[in-house]
Picture 1 (cartoon, rainbow over the protein chains, first blue to last red):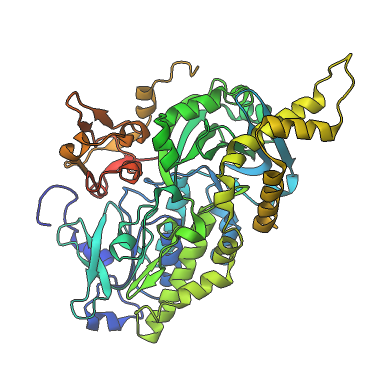
Picture 2: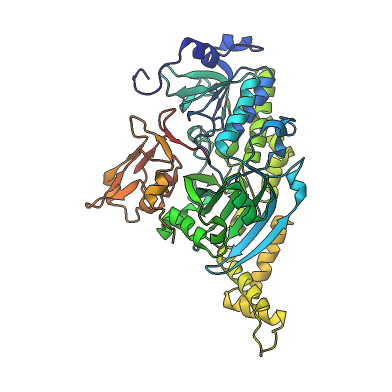
Length: 466
Length: 95
């Protein structure tokens, strides 16, 4: 740690601000040798929500961020559902960075040459209380971290947590190591919001096994286009945005595609499951190239100039892949705890990160007030998640990730639905129109789907989403 | 198909602050026995390159820090993965 490479040692003001956080309510920490009450690792939405809650409760909070600014390491498809903030930041509508409010939600299934779109539009989502918004993570995450700082949390950027500190006698986690010289940060509680790869949760032994099939890779291109062009192409009024989710566009690799409108750019990309991506030997960016060239997408993205290419892993396994959420001295939230919801028609992550981060903050605050930070004192975290939307939604949609990524859902049904439409709307005079039942049976057979499979999937879908 | 956008064009849109040391270490000996070498095709930044002697060459400088390589790797211990030094590595702006 005395190596001169890398960021300099903290100066006096950083040290007094960041590493020996001014105590408000926590004189106790002076006695047990902690630099702060809580070390939150990762200033993404989960970490900033946790830090905000704790700082408001008067605890000293150090919010560590390995990037040069919050959000610099973060990438997502592009839509946030911010009403989760109503309780935490009732005035979020005044200053949250928004590209466009989503008023058009399209679900598309496609084959190589066909596409079928369920296209929903509502002006209601374009005004308060709003629904979904496109936003850039570096702006959004910076804004939310700023709220935590305003509440009294201390943000320490450009600092990577490299491991956990454990109490030598009890084994309880009592802080983190960082890559700063003399960078050990002692804390009464650590909240790991260190993202999908969470080395801290893994080091703590909270993940039982790591199955690559629980993870997808998201690959995205941001294409610059004038606002007016975007509004004309997508049929939007200024300020309004579109959200396209696409099935059947990933070359047989389980996954999906997306197309979102920012203010003066489009976000287009694919999400693909890792083992099948690896087995296919396909290049990830080629899948995006193919999607952009699809006849249903090409006219929408035409002439867009690439301004940023990015990629990120997504924990898509839902409830079945979640780690233990607490151990002595540690809580895990956000992607680090696989809280991201990937349930077919619902693809949400930031709101689940905020919901779980806030719950972790509340549970940690309660534990600190009780004078203990062992796993039992922190158990309120799971109770809070069970009683709000985070685990309720995950429990309800437990089967969804498997269903959506199944082979029939990925290949057979998009083909079947597109062929069915083609059959319905192709006029083959002088032949008369075929009956609908005949068409369904013919196309089901052509797509290799048996009636039993069709009924079985319908039943699974009903149990999953019903 | 994708008029003019090469892989190099894509990577040129991304900001990297290169750390003094590699945060990912690849054990070339393990890779020589690997039949799949999935890291080569799956890495979205295209950082893994096959060598003529059957090994794998790795560049850490333009890494997205996503984790795909170690997740698809089927040789235990072949890829040792960490985060780069604080303040280094990739910085997204419009993600």
